[in-house]
Length: 175
Image (cartoon, rainbow, N blue to C red):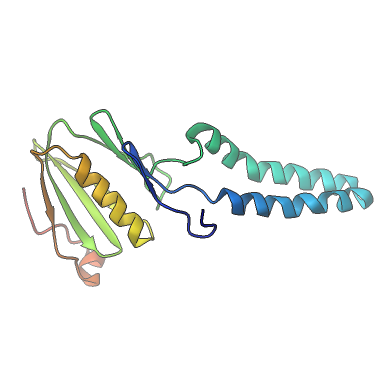
């Protein structure tokens, strides 16, 4: 397991990037070793330090308990839906129903591609694939292509220029 660049795990149900648990455990041991020395001279400060350590570790503990050792899926396929996490913000994940999907258009800047899922009625849902690592973006895109029905057309446009991305240009292809 790599400590600073965790591996990407692609399963039949999703794409995962496990958290670097070895690094996080090592970073937790260092302050824990300082705790007895701090408690000897200032017990109130040691108690506050201990409470702060627990407060920082509890979100990771609950995430590990909920999702397991692989962590939260970046892209997941459950039943007839595809789900994508939004790394850039804290809103809920994007969920796409595969039942009435007409096509998929992949467009945008190289490092910030957008996947536009077009439904039969003409409406669409977009998921921005802005995960930093190129191999992670490629794994998510391949996972998406593998789990789409065969009747869905997938169009990948040439990467947009930086100016087109700043202007907010949409895809040039229509389905």
